[in-house]
Structures are given as structure tokens and as C-alpha cells.
Image (cartoon, rainbow, N blue to C red):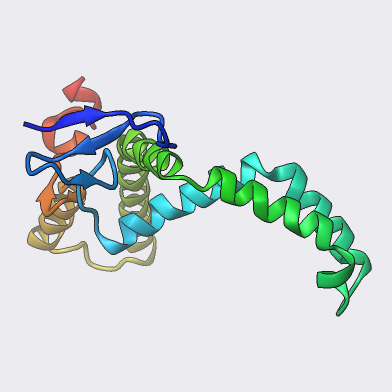
Amino acid sequence: MATTTQGPGSNSGGGEVVTPAGLPMPSRNPLPLSASQEAQVRDIYYARVRNKCKAEIKAFADCAKLHTFTASFACREPLHAMNGCMKAHATQAEQDAAREEWFAKRAERARERQRKALRKAEQEAFLREWWGLPEKDREEARREMEKLARGERIAGVRRRTGIETGQGTEEGR
């Protein structure tokens, strides 16, 4: 049974999660992701931090445009302001928010991936018909549709998608 505590020096908005052994977990979202999924979460995290420090980044970039080798000396004030802003906003709470955003957009990404795969299959069928090529083997087409219906792997478990549950097609709605 995990408990949640809020320490006086804690910078995360949701508090610190404590495990049954009393050891603090670094994140509210301990679900393991694959390396590529973690990279997607990091991209969201970095974009969120850059968005919060947009003015400081722009000020440093404007200063650096005017200087070449001397940019680190001539633009020291904007550089320190930009780095301070980035450090202030690069918190564990921001990483947790990025991970939650990634999970929230998971269904949207799955629908987009399915839409692209179906469009690709339609285009391939059209080109085969156009050029008079033989149709795909039914077994091969079935395997491709099964692969498309497979969900995304999260924490070693494959999640079901809309096609597999009947929600991805018009007749399933």
C-alpha cells in the first residue's frame, strides 16, 4: 500500500510517492516504456520546457545572431537568463506532465497509424489493379490486417486498438 507525502522542499505538484518499504519513487508514473516511447516522452518534455522559456531563448538567439565566436562572452546575460529559466522549469513534475500527455495522446496516435496503414493498403491495391499485377495472397493480406489491429506495447503488454475491439470501423460504432 503506497502513500503519498508532500515535503516542504518538494518541487513536484502531486507530491512524492512512497513505496511500501518507505523508499521514495522518483515519479508518479512508474510504468516502464520502450526506448522509443521514452524518447517520445522526452521530446514532449523538452518542447514543454522550451515553450515556457520562449522569450529567454529568443533573446539569446537574437543576441547570438550578431556575434560569432564572441557570442558566449557578449551574450552572457541572455545566456544565464535562458539557462536559469530552463533549470527552473526542467522539473520532475514537468516530466510527469509530459508522460501524462503522451499517454493521453496514445489513442490519437493509434488512430493516425491505422489511418495511414489503411491508406497505404488502398494505394497498393489501386497500383496493383492499375498495372495489372496479381492481387496479394489472402494469407498475406490477413497477416497485414492482424498486424495493423495489434495495439501498442506498453510495459511489455500489448494494448488493444479500435480495430481489434470493433471501434475502429464504421460498422463497429
